[in-house]
Image (cartoon, rainbow, N blue to C red; front, side, top):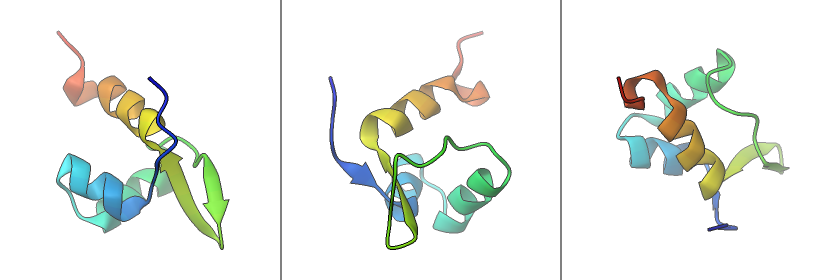
Length: 63
């Protein structure tokens, strides 16, 4: 299901229960997908992009 809602660093951080600076660090180190949109210099991701990224994170893969 496609969701057109855009999430900021703060939204992603709240969802995965970390600080926004942690999400910024993930992006800086190439661990976060590229933003789907940039508005006024700020990156945003679609919810579906974030949920796919979370599902693919090593700590969430089934062993």
